[in-house]
Length: 261
Image (cartoon, rainbow, N blue to C red; front, side, top):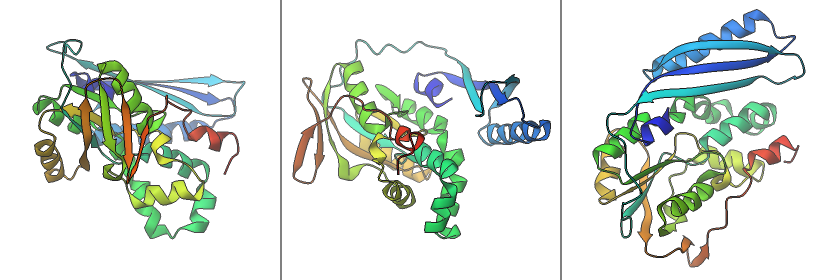
């Protein structure tokens, strides 16, 4: 739904497809469907239909969600001049990735951190939606809005530059982060800037400071992290270090999938 809003659309519903292992009990499916409906209601989104299908050759549950929306005016990005505009990052990096790790490595994480510390992270699933932030960016006449997905913010920055045909300079120390997310990443030696970041947006616009202030009034984390620049250079600053951004790397989640710690 965030991607729909980022493209200038108005989200109105989702379709859900679930592949379940053959031995899955019906009660579990009903409970899962109810959780999905509650999450959708919290976001003001309708679940149009849920299709469950048994997949006998798997042990894993697979959920696919397709967001649907409508657009009054098609956005034209190809002719936009982005040079000199502010680059804003909305919402903390690596939230989606850390929630995946929490699901997969819950026992190890609970052994390390007290429940109060993890409580905020457990309750952050609703923050994976950024429809309100995308709509707010549109109100500030954002020239480009890009959701940060698999591969994390480093990958999204590279793709942003490629899609706009414009370079950038961004300061790593300005990126919105949450301490609980950082500590979970450190426990498994994961780079939070290369982790899936659902709910996180890169926004290019003229007046980044005013947009950030408006976000903060609505309790949305946001920061001006840099500026779009002429040319093709994709520069990340970290203190006195200055380096070019690499091509998008494999999401850190795959290290967990492969059994790494």
